[in-house]
Image (cartoon, rainbow, N blue to C red):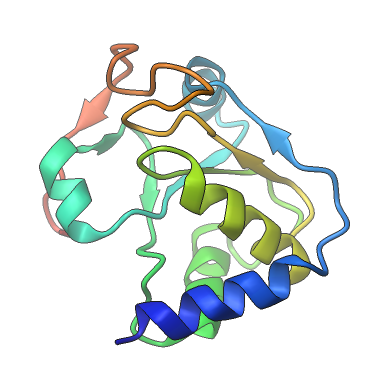
Length: 143
């Protein structure tokens, strides 16, 4: 299965990240997306996108990419027109995966990565995108 090698690569690479992590509360992320100040990338799986919908304005990149970690990085780069300095906010279900992916992307030269640590469903960081009543769109083509 591709998930295990990808996660192992993430864990290995995250120890080299040296940039400060920046967290965003879900309402702040939503406002920045709507203002065009950040690209929100939902890294959950297609099944999760179908189950809850996706944040309005989010780009979808399944972190369990068919081409592994390299394919994932390339897909993220595609969403920001190849700009590793572009402001990106990552969201997952509860903020656990985004914390690891944030560090991994920083180790790959991305310099402006934010983490919506409360995620879609909520965590100790906050109630989450859905419970806050932030805009969600049904997932259609990419699911």
